[in-house]
Image 1: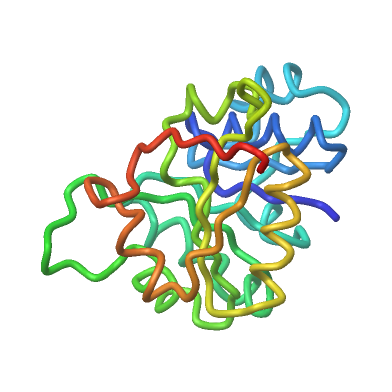
Image 2: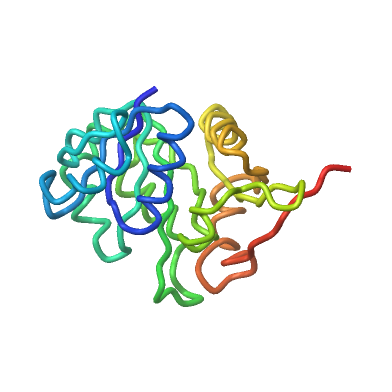
Length: 194
């Protein structure tokens, strides 16, 4: 399975490393063009390539990891390509207020044919980039989505990375409590075996 990245900021870099270390080929894109990503591609090694957002959208699964105000522009060119695909939404609206709709609801409206799964948005990049195993326990990654098979795929990836996945249910249930500043935001929880 090839993984496409729309965005290559701190979270994108940390996740790209996790995917490559787990043996997944990745294609990374950003708004500045493929040539700007060459240092990251060199760092990630042979499983990584750089491309445009359209190139990234051809992958089997796509990770959306751009700043909130860049989302409409980032998705406008690729929304048709994302129909039927799993899109992992790592975004946070850092300026969100109580009246704002959850980020994943807004993203689902922009790419209505995609299977959006909210994940990897509650840990800061530096924590996400570290070993998920802590003192015989595993760091927790929360995820939610409206498509059971898409959630299962993302849950399996979370487990493959070495994290403990916690399924929060639908996007309406999970996304609001994982938003920046909400109950589960930036919690570095560890799950220990019984």
